[in-house]
Length: 278
Ligand code: SF4
Image (cartoon, rainbow, N blue to C red; front, side, top):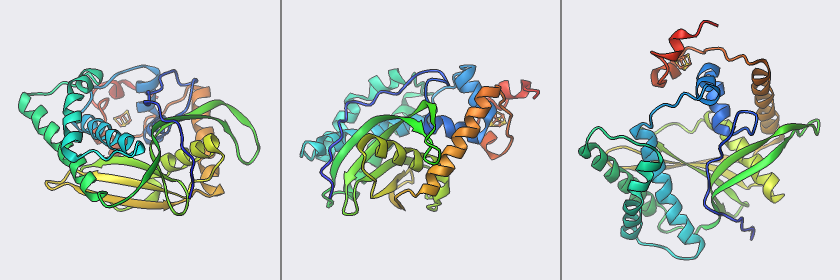
């Protein structure tokens, strides 16, 4: 069992240009479509916060309240967590510049966020997890594990939760999902490897494992835990291969479009993307 306790000041979303830092979300967007990455992170085209994205943030805030209190050995009842989420709702709406189509839409989303967090609390009610870190920003230089080369740009990420576990510290990421999904590790690989890299650099300790905890937005919310083993050398090699390819694109200023299923959810589909000509 680890007794390590990481400092967890309120996580601030890191801001900066593409040469200031790399993050798992930047890498994932670039992998999905380099053009969409360029439009967002280089051209600065902002897209409106969707209800789904907003719900995810509200749920994250609720879970943060749960675990920050657990860190202080205080288990707040579900009603109190709900009250605190409601207290912070308007602030979150303003922070995310969220616009609802109607008061009814806002209220429905509010109730959904409360229900998901309540279902999660019910699910973990009998566990005695000791949080080591909650919503913690981690940043570390990128040192290629094979060559020892410092890539000259840091990796940054916000780790949702680290708890003490029998096998060692367990790194946890929360997701809100529209439906249950099979636990395909590769769909989360960039995030899992990035968080493990950051955790090891920050603590000098190896994680015992990693977990994706999904709060599924079904009519009756479902909670699903998917566990993954500690990262191996091969995972970090693969992560660095992706990072090097990403940096090559930045160097060349080359961001090709990648038409496919991701276009279905892309806000640039009928606007900026149409103007791209290679
Ligand atoms: S519509 Fe598709 S190809 Fe165009 S930017 Fe979006 S994801 Fe990329």
